[in-house]
Image (cartoon, rainbow, N blue to C red; front, side, top):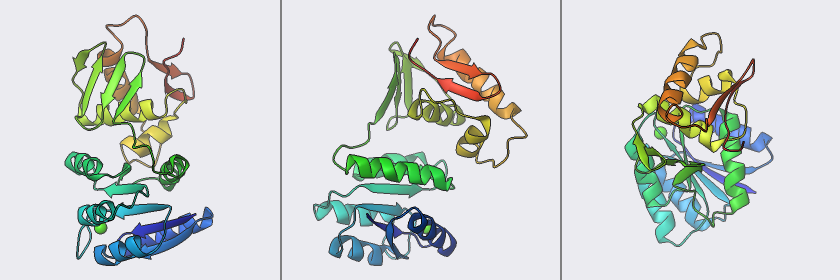
Length: 225
Ligand code: CA
């Protein structure tokens, strides 16, 4: 499997290339948009990992160029932290998935594998669901039983993570690194507080509770009884 990485930050680019090579992929690294687009159009890749902010032409333009040329390969977009507009724009332009910087390499690898399994044919669902709960990634809207739920941006990210990995018990340390960008699990209070608030909004008015605590392990969102 051959992957194109378009990333101008030397450290991130090298880190991605090295990690992907170690995971068994063949990797080409382009350090600016023009180079990236040229490679994407002339070589055959199974997947492209594309940074948004690039010298020359930016990630959007590279993505547009790829799609305009009729290339269907999956594109995983790397967007700046909390740049919600980036995600929407990326998905609208035909990106298959996005990852917010900084990210854990394990998370990137999981997304890459998922995209490769899908072969770029089916677009990522824009709505994540569990029972009667719906999270709309494009509109940044959450409803349960058709009723709108207002969430803060962190609560939204937390719920998105729980929904993407539903049925899986997520340790606090993983939630800390994915949602708060903290690489330690000593201060778990912030997560407990956020989970409690999220539960009030998502579960309090309903008999069927979706978010559960697994003692000593973490949290799980589970739509099965
Ligand atoms: Ca960049």
